Image (cartoon, rainbow, N blue to C red; front, side, top):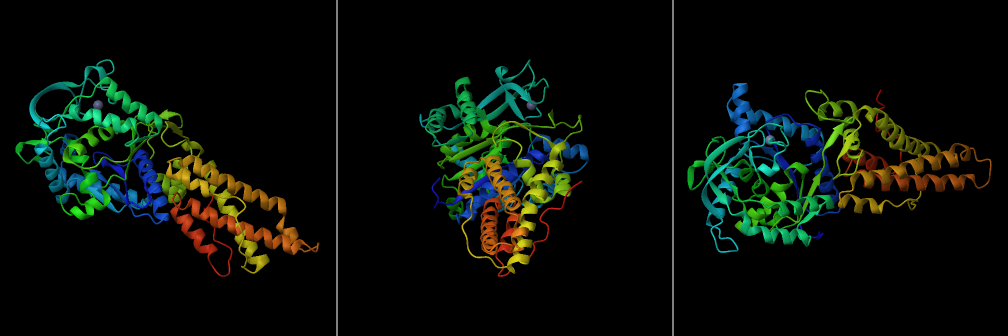
Length: 487
Ligand SMILES: [Zn+2]
């Protein structure tokens, strides 16, 4: 990534049909860590998140609840925004697809698409009839090949046969360009398993897709055919453009959408982002995103998360128990970002107490206490014994659990260094060199803590800020506990 160029980081917009769960929190926190890491280096960074509020499923859920779709999504968007704020996700905009500027932007996007000619000189949009197997839950058609035992692989339900008059996007004409861009890493897919998965889609064959729906009313009408509503994905994906001003403020949009874009998401929506979206962008003459990062799925205590098992993790419950930074830490540490893994929720308390309360919390508390007591709050400038410069590289390359493991190895090292040096004995001054040793030790510990504060800030923003403030004082005093022990 070119460091001087503004960076747009996005989460997917989340489907307003249900309440936010730990998966949404996970994507949001990861995106926030990336944005904070770059902001820390003074790079102009825009973090975009929001809610996807159109489509049949939303209309159905609202009807069941006995409210209008608009009233329903107004409520849902509030819940999502509230949870994201609570998680300290520092977004620059929370976009909602029912907002007028988004709707106008999508219509402009669609008009451009309608006017576009493919690289093979054909109209990018054409009218056709679609007969296919449609999963109501996914709001998409499936090919026979994609089904598992004739059922939707995600919902395990038999899709219905449906015939519609739709407008289609001539995806086929753009596929070679996208495939090449992915192969050459001009469109980077991270991790490498993601790249393999997407290249696999091309091998299986990707079909043109319909960009409108006849049956769905809750959505954006096609500007040239109001009998049709924009397909929910063709309404949702352009949020990445409208969110920064496309259709409203061209200058602002161009500033943020110039190719240095990181889309973060869970793997299940990879095809839409890595194949459909770049093709749509090519058609309307916009640059492709530079990077798509997909994370895996997780189990909870070794089991698939599901309502029927009753093990759905609510991020709000986690915050109540472990605090915001504790929650962020516990979610990002168990397994490498990008892979499938397990959230060992039953061991979260143990981990929180060991790493945060006893680990970092204790290190900060004992170090600042000793600096106050033995050095009157003042230490000399020193070099941190352990450099954490490379954790930033790990963060920039989405290796969050590795970065945190490196930081915490240093925390452990520092705590052991204190135990070994026994500063409380040095303070008694039985030997001539004790005072010198003590002063050097305290200076190094403070320098190390400053380095730790910088490294943790993208991950634990509040803790990072508190620690930085505490170490920046002219006279350091004993810090209040950073983490309360949890029982
Ligand atoms: Zn489905």
